[in-house]
Length: 151
Image 1 (cartoon, rainbow, N blue to C red):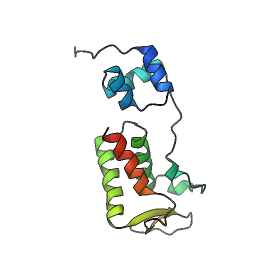
Image 2: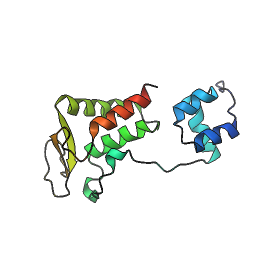
Image 3: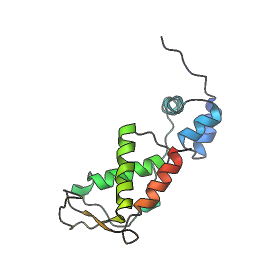
Image 4: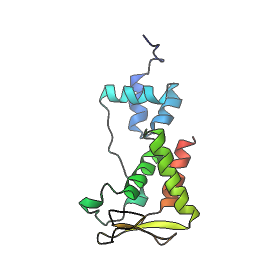
């Protein structure tokens, strides 16, 4: 049977969780692993509403057929990373690479329900515009994600 990590102080975990700290910060403060914190949170039945990064709040509803579009998925993953949510290393790397490539090309992302399909987004809806002119601030999402991941 594999060795278990150190016991986590449930009261302190609840306190830090309620403060809204990301799991990696809670793990540091408790001297536990990220996965140990995640498992303890789940066992304790704790949950918090996942907030979208401000860059994802545009006020324009996303059409149902665009909710699984790659650009939106990547932006959501960057948002999750910025909140300390655990996502797979592959998804993390892919979202970061996607955002870095946009930045290198001087592009940002916008959305219009009636935007036609394109190479950027085969489902349509999402399209690229010059950086600073988009509805979404992908550079801000990337920066927030990288800051949290690099802590």
